[in-house]
Length: 323
Image (cartoon, rainbow, N blue to C red; front, top):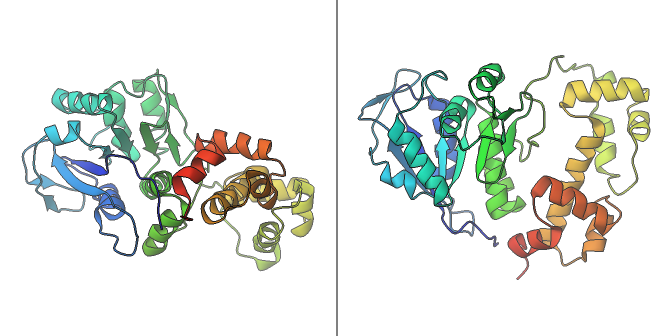
């Protein structure tokens, strides 16, 4: 198994008094565990305290870590777990270290309220970002130059990546692993975590209407049918027919239950299949497009560039599993 990881595999998570322990645990679990089952060079994970310890964390624990911000400036990826108080501006030396890291090409990843640390650096000015839905209004008020997206799981701007609350940090972390090592490696990490291998960043943070458990109205048969017919030119009407619902009722139910419209869900499933085919086969781009439901290479390229910020050919060159 091979993939093209970033040149700098060092990942540094910041720790501070009042640390959100769950979000910090996400960073440690995703990037800090050894992965002997994967035939890749894995991340080199470290922790840097922004102030002298021991540091108190949520849940009554304490944490000790080196307090050397020089490690931050030279990191390849920096993770900012939930910040202790969104209205508290982080120390100037921390912000300067993050700016220096960005100038050196580091990616900066925030989980939940960690976005307030990233926002204070100015690195999100003019960009999109998200955070836990409880904090989106405050983020927009404090930093009006940021385009705050209140109802998505995560946002990837390339060098700055932000996630919504708590578990959405897992989705963003798996997205980053997928970006670095490809679909197969990310799926193996997800299996070890026992979580869904992929939830699209544009998926809703929460669902207003509880999912019904009445099997007579379940979407499961329609979803299974769609997965078996991705290469067909499916319409919402086709999808609704498989669910024995009217198109309007089906579209509303699907959005309520799945968090995204049916068409967007289909695009994401087709992209997932296309990524797998690009990694695991030598099929031509035209054939990959046909076998993933995009019909033409031009349509595949359009969706790939929009969602993956790369072309199908470049993706294959980076993540092909075939020598």
